Amino acid sequence: MDIRRNTGLFLGGNASLNATRLNDRNVSVRDARHKGQGVFANQDFLCGETVIIGLVDSEQTERTRYSVQVNWGSHVLMTSPAVLINHSCNPSTTVMNNRFGAYDFVASRDIYEDEELTFDYATTEFEIIAMKECLCGEPTCRKTPGGYGELTEDHPLKIHGLVSDYLRRARQTLIASTG
Ligand SMILES: [Zn+2]
Image (tube, rainbow, N blue to C red):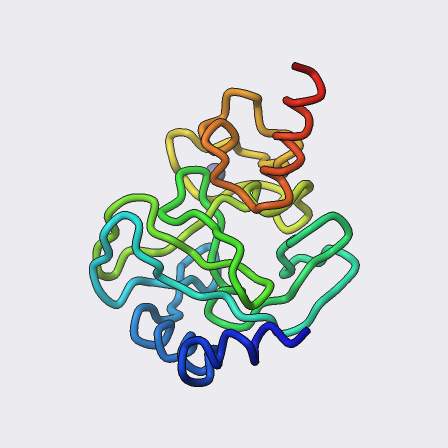
């Protein structure tokens, strides 16, 4: 099924083109000092607003440094700007699976113009190979962040299910089976 074509009709146009326009208006790619490139807000956003719509460049069966995991054994390389969003242990956005087979990045708190946009890589990756050491500098930094599989059971992202659908489903199944 061509999901892109179906939702394109629903939105009355080319959905991926509209997503690109939204991304171009909302954010820009800039130098993020020691982290390399990063993605920054062009304007203020309220908590709950969609800031970036991730689009798929290619699908992969193996994890790479730049891929995001969308299911067990399923990874996608997103196009810019989504592929350039840096990790933070105290991120400004959370992921939501989107109609393109990638993720939307939704403000998890109010975000101000020129702030760097971040998400926690453990909300999509069961394991992390992209970082040996975290550079986020947040007081709550995990230093050597593992993936979702290494988050503690009481981690807020895990408790509130603010993670990829496949990880949330796995946890619900686990909870159901253990009572
Ligand atoms: Zn960190």
